[in-house]
Length: 624
Image (tube, rainbow, N blue to C red):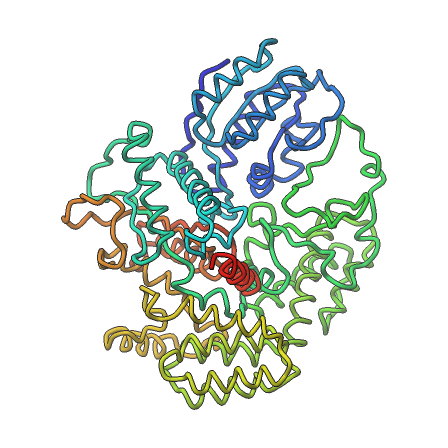
């Protein structure tokens, strides 16, 4: 067996890093091959490679290692891209005991223990394993600056360790493995800082520091880069310190789709959208009974709802900046500008057939695209965005999201005005035409903002919800989130009101920004944290270093910062980081010359955020 190897590729575009790994492993193995993946590497591959790109590398079969064994295909070479878990090693051993493929080329996403390599070598009696490498892709790249280290049970990041020590320890181990792999892929060892008062942040920081600075120090020693550049910084944050950002309504394309429809690893299940034209969900004849040697690449992470023979290109909408130029251009566009962009896309599709016309509604656009003859790839792209835009428009109108969002933004962003904000929130909560989930959400935002002074008003809102027949369990969840995310448990200045300086800065910011868009006044607190970190003003008392005996000397300004949010990131934060990177590339502002990356354990919407807390609340009962 070949010795582990495979140096990490250069570059700070995370999608490019993973693509270079995959292209290298597929290029090194010539001829017809099968790509053998596990559950997590399926996600890794599907977010950076399209089906057609996979096929270009002579991959004629994509299979899951844990799936039921199929027929022997000795004419194919197995390219195995796997996490080096105990379960995967055992599965590979079973494969080698009774080989299905002619050759095996093993590429692990992280460090492999010597004992596990020895186990594989002992089973490879027929010498069918031709190479073993470590390619550090143990994380999922959503965008060039945004990544995830997904946890099987994401709610574990929000609950005390003592409730479920075993599974919580596994979660820390998974985060450590994922972020360590990121460090190795970027060839950087980071100075680690974490949020004070968060048990999970401190445990993760210490685990990662022990691995990179003590246990595997030589592996992570990439030398000093010298000059004025400071060490890269990993800033570990707790989602509970900012519960507001995942609870707000969103008004940019990517964030809106996730909040209203849900995005799973860059994919939206179109079967959840009512009224999809039947022929856009029919089976392609070639895929009803696919030949065993040619099976299309179907990412497991967003399976098409068990519809037999569903045509893959219509089973889900892929929202990837790498694969969709229109989405890349408009992913951060606000709702109004998006409508004009989609209309331009439809006009372009019509002009190709000399059939341009005026459209008054999104429904007219959808009907026009559906009935174009001779379906093409561009028609599919246009249909996808028209369909999504149509569903977003319906949700905005049906749920009254403009009125709701205006109140949300005022409560969270404007100067405190208890009486006025209570009146506005009470009007929404008392209106049964507003969705129950939205009434609960705006109540929760009000409770977070006016935790000290608004208890009487909050009690009145809760009474109104009770009288409306809201499930007591949902009201209990609201109270639980308020308790878990209370002000004395937070470190950050969530509402910029903890000091005269922050209040003045917030007021000045409101006047400088003006009222360009009342629905997007909110700026994630993450932006302020990153600015203070880069400027050297982030207090070590609140965000200490993981290295206990670190020198008190002020570090040089970092040129690379990774913010890792335990409990999940949001698309609003991803947009903010992307805009800071763009400004930095132009040499503007405090982010000039700095590369910022954002990672987390999941991708939150208001629904998933509250679902995680629901799990925690249930677990608390068993822990007592």
